[in-house]
Image (cartoon, rainbow, N blue to C red; front, top):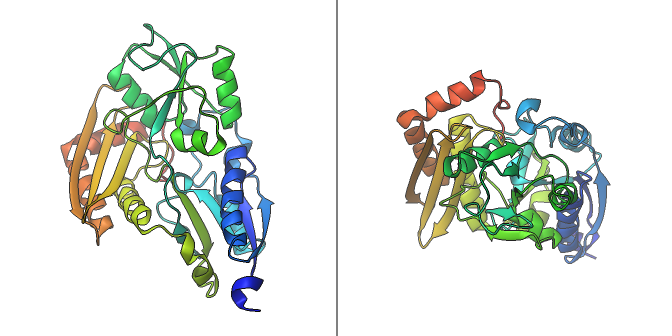
Length: 318
């Protein structure tokens, strides 16, 4: 019997329905290669704090720290994360060994009664806990009443169905993975709502120097997704931004080039800077850094200074 068929992997995952879908998805792929797999549920800080808007929590790695502690202690062998939850700079001792093929990276407009953002009545109540989404919504419709929306996907959809909101904005990838697409009225084009860096991609994190594991997990890595998300995360890192800072980044491979579109916005939508260009596919970080530098020089630095100064954003984290 070869090592390929006798490996045993313990996967660390958050306990939400979506996180478990992701862990089970990776588990099924590993089992298909003959590995034995067990999933360990780990509750993170972000899971425990559910009554405060994410942008006000201010905890770096809030959805990953406890999982990394279990990884460091040898209680699990790998962790499956939504890439957008992972800090752009991992703590010492960890590495991303694979980034899987990306699901739809865009945001979804969900509503019972309205088909588009433009259809919403004056002062409509829209739910999102993301400053990135809030800023872009406000840039389109400054009259909208944006309210924090926390909880898992089911909780958020239930609040919409019960009439607490006229519409909510969620990541299309999570809804599609869970098969909960009934209330999706519109997949919002990237040109209207730029996604979060890494949105729709899964990251496999392991202990640094874990010699045998990377080889076993190599088949999970998607080179095009890895290049695109590396570019997005480089931009985010250059801007010093986190997942709750109004920064959007979307990259994709186009032929032999890598194309990046990014935004920095004031949370109230009064100012939105957009920058796009293509670059060398072999150096995705260079393109991300260049676009980040351009946005800062065009006034992004002032926007972000004001955001941090108002205390509405978490410290650097994607």
